[in-house]
Length: 186
Image 1 (cartoon, one colour):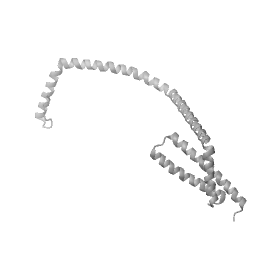
Image 2 (cartoon, rainbow, N blue to C red):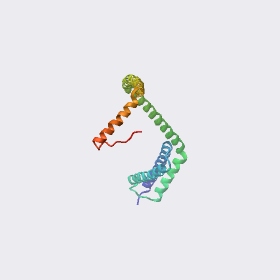
Image 3 (cartoon, rainbow, N blue to C red):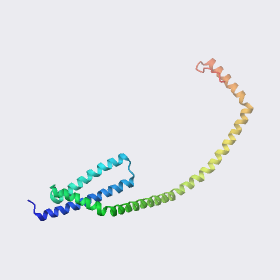
């Protein structure tokens, strides 16, 4: 039989485990709210939370009182959770939300710093790219306009005779070599 003083110690320990369980619940609640989980994510998170919390409570009970589950252990867990939820939960939730906002803000600052460093690193490459791309683009535009002008002039001057000449050459090749079947281009 366990001495009465040890039972009080185990009872106080189970109350503390209940308080820790309540804090873990608030931590999960705030985390879930900040992550904005959808229905499936919430369901999976709930299952995962309760599995982990059950394992943690069992490990703490195993370390504290060799895993003996008695009525005072269950009462201690419930009383500890109720004490936490009624007395400490609001302040702990506010503190956790503040911590999450701080982490989020630090993350945004880190992303901005990395973005600025990345822009500084890429700046010489962009300058080289622009110093090559703009002149090549202008040359391409000039050559494209020039080519369309030359093509238009050549088409007006000798466009139709070239087409007739091509047809004649194809006919003669088809007569000599049957591989070159003549199809009239219209």
